[in-house]
Length: 175
Image (tube, rainbow, N blue to C red; front, side):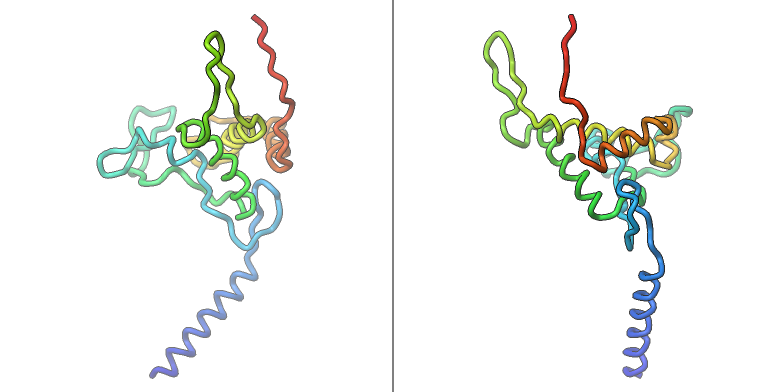
């Protein structure tokens, strides 16, 4: 009987290995074939924190309804979207930005009395925000159906994120 179980385990492992080699997926960011896609979150988990009930769940609403859609969620909305390499790339920008937002990193600015100088890595912060917009634009979940970037903007954001290019750093105050 034991020999039969060993053979079954070996066969199941072999079948899984063969199955993995046959199925390839395309990462939505780099457009490369990958063996599997991550269950990528669309918005950072911390963005949902105020919506959680006492059991750690939250309702999902759609813009067209005042009532929750579907069942209560325990984690933020996720989709099979990115390969591991691209997931790591976006995660690095997210870690940096959330550290600034929740004041978990270095001092973010200096108060000079009459003015305040905000210190942040422009490229990382902008790429984080662009990644949120792009993820919501390409997400399939009903909640994000109202985010319609159009092909021109979707492609532009896609290229900027793929190439880690935040665009111009120019910001002019025209008061």
